[in-house]
Image 1 (cartoon, rainbow, N blue to C red):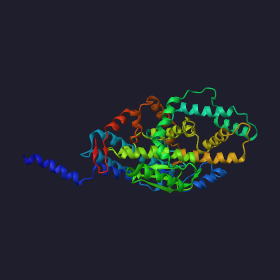
Image 2: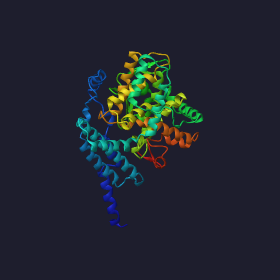
Image 3: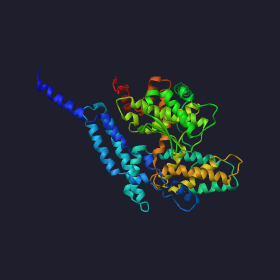
Length: 465
């Protein structure tokens, strides 16, 4: 045998042994994942909210410590360097090269968006059109672009319902204030929007019963309300009994947070420290957080394509959409989701409303929408609507306090798009398989191809083709 032919192979083998694998490099890049939600948490939020609601300030001026302290320039360089090593790795499966490339570009874009938010916040007393334009552009690329026709249709429908109510006294005053703030709103023309058929809703109700019946059995039927510790106990029992070894690295934490959420890169579910969760809401969270977010992350982690654990580029819409759909299917009821988020984004994006103007419209919409026929609008109801609407407005303006964040259009767009997909495959269990195989878009043909091409990895790290 020719020893010279063996030499290059032996040398290459030693190099591969001494250098990090693709999976190890991917773990390193995930360690510096840009975390928008974490970095957009203010440390003076309660103080600013109180000043705002008291009328002491026109707009909140939140302080975001992580946004100010993180080295986004340094992180950008690290992401680029690790990304280049992954893309050019000698044993990277070439069919996954473009997927890793786009995934890394998404990290770079999100990191840049956080950097821009920091810089925009730092010059909040001035208008910098260049930074603002780039921030909005990255918003579009990362989360999608809101459609003005959808915004106007949703707003028109909500205002139209209020206009038909027989209001008097304080309620009538608030209605007139709302109309002055909004200007002309066409409440006569109602655009036709997608709605799934009764057959598809019933089919999905059966699917959810079959998929999640065992998980839901861990939610005690005789408990009306769950505090953080009780919710943690439910999640942990599901983690242990239903997921077993597949989720042995996962944990359930209680900490300061805005909502129950899954952090796939950290392999944990976070429960807010002070939270009371109803029986129905608890069942919905099990289906949404564990049955969609966590399950899809675990399924993705079991493949040889690591981005499937955290999400292929563009997965966010269908990910949140699926969570919403599973909750609706659990009840066997359909309704459009994320309407209020979409309207808030529309007010900021299309009407160019600032935080204060958006808030003033939102609390009036909320108070009048929930007002029952013949009821009086009380001070208590107004205070409740104002408190809730501040949080809803803050959710869209967080990070800069002046520009909209489009992330939450995923609740409306994602649910609509995924219901359309389910409508198209109604009853096809083979195509439904794509839904939970990983954090990808099952309606996207390229993502479907990737899901079919991946190999599963067993507990010993071996591929199962």
